[in-house]
Length: 137
Image (cartoon, rainbow, N blue to C red; front, side):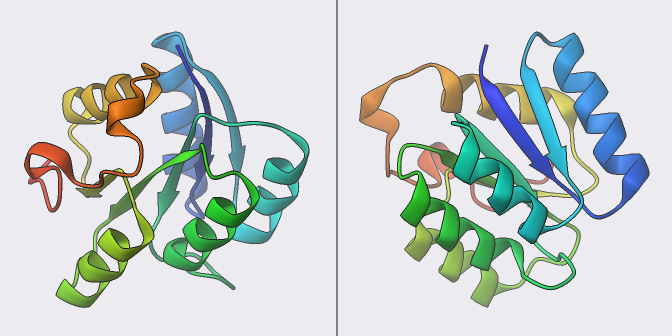
């Protein structure tokens, strides 16, 4: 299983995701905003960044951009309740691995996390494979 950082400003959602992902066997860290997440990512390697799109101070898209510069091997998954076509296009340009709608379907989330953490180099930098973008999850 992979090393995941969950970035979510809603405390209940963040803590719930952390608990669920740990029960699935992942090693999980969390941050309530992008600034805290970046500090952790500079000190530790993560396989997956699971981030909310709308965060205080810095958007999830901006966070992905910074993480890609710091740790290009980290795959990013964005989750949002406020999807727009512009955000989807920006996600594709940034190489986001998956773009998931809230409320999250946990089975779909687990599926994308398995794909993102399995170490298949053919998936690297090929965002939204197999219709991942804007899944109704």
